[in-house]
Image 1: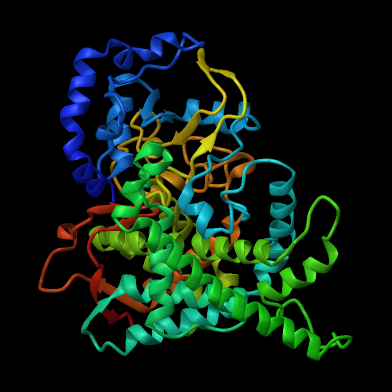
Image 2: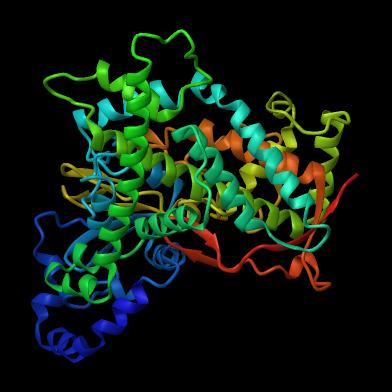
Length: 506
């Protein structure tokens, strides 16, 4: 998406150069800012600012900038000032010390269009509305009791995935595709009470999650908004919003009709039988006040968050874990030894077994450290002026926290680029937002509320995959030759499909 923007901008380069050479004000306008003590900034061009420095993998491009200028860097994307933080100290200041000031979100056109005007949890601005929606989600959807109530769904879908791999009979399997189907099925059953079979729905989810991370020129250079129309981004966003709305509308109507049919007879309902749509419909009756109404769009936006956070990031995390295990046979053998000993010959590993699997926990933590699912988390925005690590940060500054870079910081991690799960075995460092050197789910009040939901899926799937199968790359290629190249949207994906040959461990 950024590459297409550069190509469209190419005819403007002569104009930009003229402005750069003959308009000192454009080059040094930062000197006229009210707050003089700003963080270090790379030199910028008129109109586009530092957009030309953001490559196809922004987490790597931004790391290069902070390595040159320091852990806090102020860049200019079009007309928008953006603060980039790439150290644990900076993350601590933003996510804890000044959490309230940095708790809001910038209004971005694509998420806004896909989430009914940012009525969801992830992208809504900080305030009373966000607090109400998040409270309903945490208490009604993501509490320990509610997550536990979906155990049967997770275990059934894990079993189906394991059986599907077994049907390959040693032939090549696209494990990434199977993991996507697995997580989609879990989330569909949890959210809707049933699966949506077929390529069409899976394709819709892929396009939806891809667009959430797409670069919109108009957000940063409003007078170039025509680029988003010219390259089809605006139309694709509208089309996917309509398609997804049709699915959600039909599901809502189906659930409402069923509830009406059994109105007054709730004797058969229990925690296990309630899907998320039913839970939200029930909450709708209880949360209608003068200040907040849980209307249809709010319900739809909340369900969209579950899909955005619960499918793409979860399946890719498991895919990266298997990739690293293939490249590191020693780690694979040790993990298989642990799960085999704890399983004690059972046909499948259950969720009750997971608590004892300390090396499994370490493998997942190490995977999340090296392959942070959302490498730049979700952008924040300051709501008032603040002094941050000695620098003046004006209100309205966008903030990017490079969690991927922090997870690979050699000053924080011994042999930071090495996949070495043992580093977590005797460490108290966790992913729940209390340790700012490790932020796969963010931290503070805007940290991911679905950590428990995601982690239990990761643990259950990975434990059963390595318990049942040995994985190897095809064509006699060595595991350490596996391509680990990345491609980035909002989520960090493998660039190439994870094609494996699975052989039974029994």
